[in-house]
Image (cartoon, rainbow, N blue to C red; front, side, top):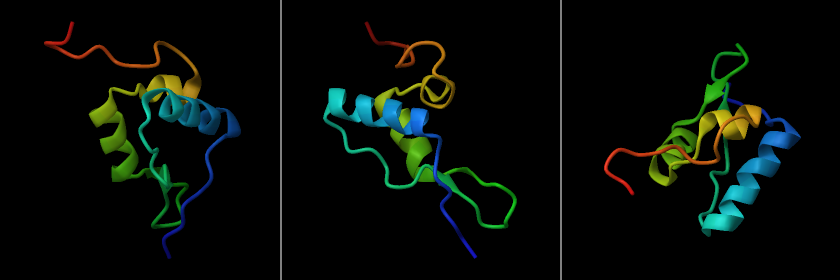
Length: 74
């Protein structure tokens, strides 16, 4: 049975703050657990991070910069 575990409140706050700053709707689900093993990031969340430049380290751990520098961007 597939479940969508909740993320830490601090991570949810950072994700919501980023979404508010950028005007981008955050993904509904960040984690997915298909096998009862604790879960992993959803494709939806990983694609959101890739598409917006959102740093996984910043969302998850509160470390580093909010966004990731991208090659070819000023």
